Length: 206
Image (cartoon, rainbow, N blue to C red):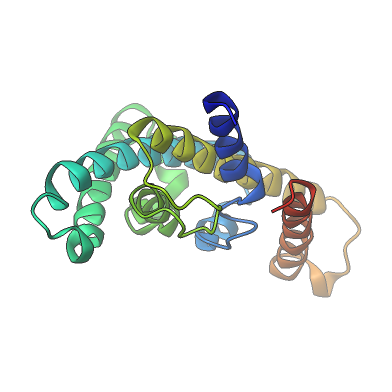
């Protein structure tokens, strides 16, 4: 298998086959919490892509450049990663507060919650400890592979969030029984989307 093919499979696997929201069920709080407004969803998706890419790069460098050589990587990587992610989220929060106050207010509590967004931490963890998502890749990622993998995870996160938001907005106009409106129908729609994503695993033989 060529290097280009391997990277392409890594990207597709992270974005679709192993979608972090709909097949791994990680970060569902933001998935349900902000998916009722497309404008907010787009802002959240872009913020997560930026934070996740920067966090995975910074944590990979910190892990292999400092934590692992010092012999403390196995038990200090989680608090170190959270510290890096928190700093990046603060940067995004200050930027939005200054240049996009409307989006900052619309995202509300979910913006600072990116700090504890398990999707961001999970992607950073997988980059230095392959096998967390059972992607049939048990070797250590290079920095380039980390960037490709994280791009796939973050784009998959955004795509799932956007598609779910569009579906919820359409369901708001549909003749849904009153007892199923709102949260019950959102859970049903999420389950159906999840079945479709899980089915991709069979298509790719995973």
